[in-house]
Image (cartoon, rainbow, N blue to C red):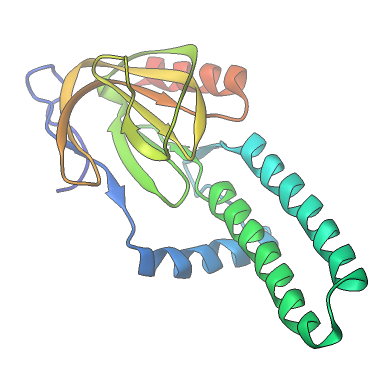
Length: 214
């Protein structure tokens, strides 16, 4: 079922669907995103506005991997016997590749805003699309919960968290609760979407403008 809405009234809303790529597709998409990131291809197409997320998470990953590579490099030089060093260098290369793939996948899969819709993205994990005519408002609110991807937010009624991991900074609230089918097949009623953004002030302003225009 395609994500979307009926006539935009509270009685015409239909089910929103969370889309999740299979693991076989994630690797291919990851390398495609890495190639596009390294060649600096535009993230948003014509008529689209990209709202970035996960910048802090990318920085944490780079710092952790960078420090690990430094320690592993010193270990390779001072401790490991020569016969083991090629395998150890391969392990270091795999760590670097994994961090670059993660960075590319989160950078190349932002939230996308058009004149009619808002596509929420949790990197390569999950995506869903909300018609702007069904949005009642946007506000800033910081919440944190365990897990990854698009998931139910514990302790918040009819609320969904849309992050790669960790913290969300904005809330998009619908005019009425809608049925939503999660990637695991379960269905829940949702009215509020909590999403991570890199620049909460700019994203809040852009979303308010789009909702008012719609």
